[in-house]
Length: 197
Image 1 (tube, rainbow, N blue to C red):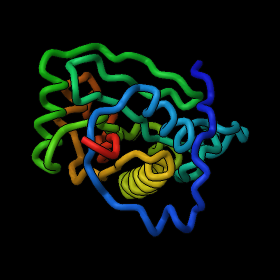
Image 2 (image 1 turned 180 degrees about the horizontal axis):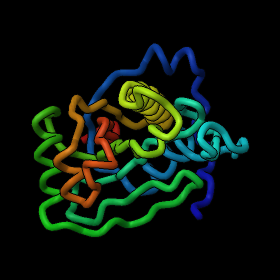
Image 3 (image 1 turned 180 degrees about the vertical axis):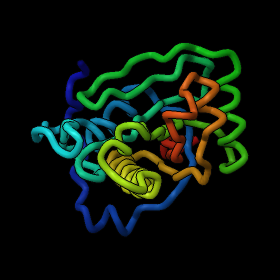
């Protein structure tokens, strides 16, 4: 388990919203990603069992039925280190390192942004989980992906970091690190970096 980050930012919400801009900066540390995800994606409470007998969780970012079917895979751009899966009770699990996956991530990011700095947060939806509870699950996971990206982007701004939503699904990268396409659907992501290069 990771320790909660110490509060260091007291920006007023209105001023933060007015100042927010998508931008690309420089590399960041894992502690920056831990703080962003602590404030935007951790499990705050468990609220019992909901549809299809699946546990309901309350997190800062909204999700269909409180199911939170989207996993977050973190890939630093500055090195070829292992990607990490964010665990919403606040921790990380290192995923198997696959040759070429970090380079593939950088190549996809550079196609969209002026540089590949910082950390790419990739979203992958567990379609079996959402399908057990809802009809038309794909529309729900794309909606949840947008809500998660917006929440992460606002938290990054509040923490004086840069954020840029990525206009890619990311299926090739997810398959490269071992997420099978028949159960998991890549549903976008967001790039987090420092303010300055």
